[in-house]
Amino acid sequence: MDITTIIHSLQAKFPGIVVGASADQLIITKEVVKPVFEFLKNGPAAFTSLHSITAVDRKDTVEVVYHVHSFAHRVMLTVKVILGNDQLEVPSLTLLWGAADWLEREVFDLFGVRFEGHPDLRRILNPDSWTAHPLRKDFQMDGIVPRPVK
Amino acid sequence: MAVNEKILGSELIDKVPGGGFVLAKTEDLFNWAKSSSLWPLTFGLACCAIEMMVTGGPHYDIDRFGSGVFRASPRQCDVMIISGTICVKMQDSIKRLYDQMPEPKYVIAMGNCAISGGIFYHDSYSVVKGAEAVGIPVDVFVAGCPPRPENLLHGIIKLQEKINSQKVKTA
Image 1: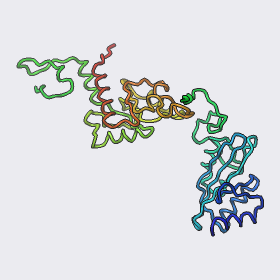
Image 2 (image 1 turned 30 degrees about the horizontal axis):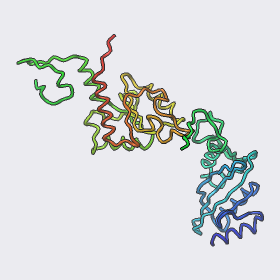
Image 3 (image 1 turned 90 degrees about the horizontal axis):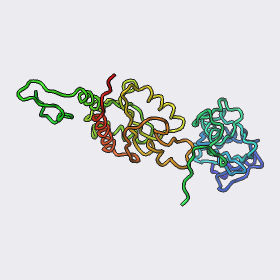
Image 4 (image 1 turned 120 degrees about the vertical axis):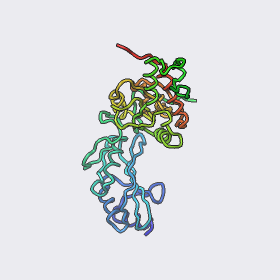
């Protein structure tokens, strides 16, 4: 089962899934996050391993990026969910993969994306007293010395 | 009594002709004792701690200077080697460890991060700009990224020189 077969089977089940910049990259909406990942994990593609969750701040949108890996078919898939800046919420994957717990906490800590259904959505790296999210483009804090322009 | 051996502070001891005793200042004795048994805190923050561990190993042998007894409790320590990057979340713990150390206590800031924030000085939200920004007074700065083990040993020798020139406080 190669990556195109997997993506075709996925597109047949969930219409509206777009292939991204490369052939192993999918862009989905946040409404289908849970069924899509459930199909990826428990379906024939058997993406049993969640490698990483991260995010990219595009200023007007925030992309949550998932990497899943199938040991059975030796393929890796990138799945992106694009969120509006005013609606930074996406369903949690903690019930599918235990690994999602801390990964989602890290994305919440650094980008402020809230994962609905997460059992313990606290900051993981930064002090609990902080309210801002440092990897957002509009992040500002006192005491940061800017790099001098050459 | 043999005082001709080349030991630290031996030039301070007055030899008495034909005598079976020596004369020395208690100040020098105390300083000699303090500087020859600087017990560091078992405490590492980043990659500099790896160099500190190597310094403690047999090749560089920090025990030659009496500083090989890394203690796991701040109550038993004389010197705190701040080896690595100080993060915002870590600074309170470091300050507390320093406060728990009994007097007399000394601090070596090892590496550029512990001196000024180092390569994380610019554009960093999570790194404190050195040990003195946390409020810990530093006795010896050891520059490097990370410093070589010889460099840390040089810092310890400098600290010993500093202690040997100190006045003993009396009530």
